[in-house]
Image (cartoon, rainbow, N blue to C red; front, side, top):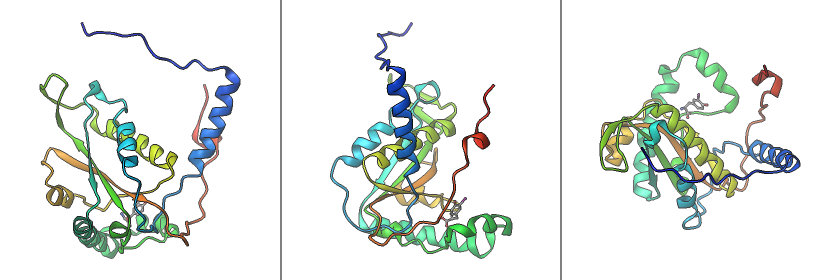
Length: 219
Ligand code: IYR
């Protein structure tokens, strides 16, 4: 039997819940994926606090199958940019089917990824197939993709909440990240998150989010 403790639960009045729900919706709606970053530095410790928030995410058997590699050094960012652009050129010049390129076109993306060098931090999120639990016992992980997806969502929300811009970048094949960052083969790159401040004249595409009746059904 494992130890238990009383739940610390914040039981709020209905009106407060309603108000908070609307505030959170507005806050999350104001997050936009940014592709034009400034090189302005991020205050020390802010990234760490957001990463700790990500690390509180629920996970299969609480095995926390994630690793966050934070890249701030110019040389490593340059190497990541070069390798990512090589993958992206292959993607845009043939690997991507027309159907995919069609749905992407409104975002005006291409193989050039200067933000990988300009932005002050890149966070590479790895999904672990094995991990060591709190007793030091190695175990296979369960639902690692779901778990890492949730932790990444926590991280993106936290970074937005503290006033940082992010870009969820997924070079088509991210295997080069294991080699560059010296991560073991049991760790699979899940996402490359670019973090920083938008450039002063940053523009974003006009997009729509689906209304609630298109994304939810109540039974
Ligand atoms: N990885 C490429 C292509 C790309 C794919 C999707 I799906 C996007 O939402 C955006 C881009 C790139 O980063 O350009």
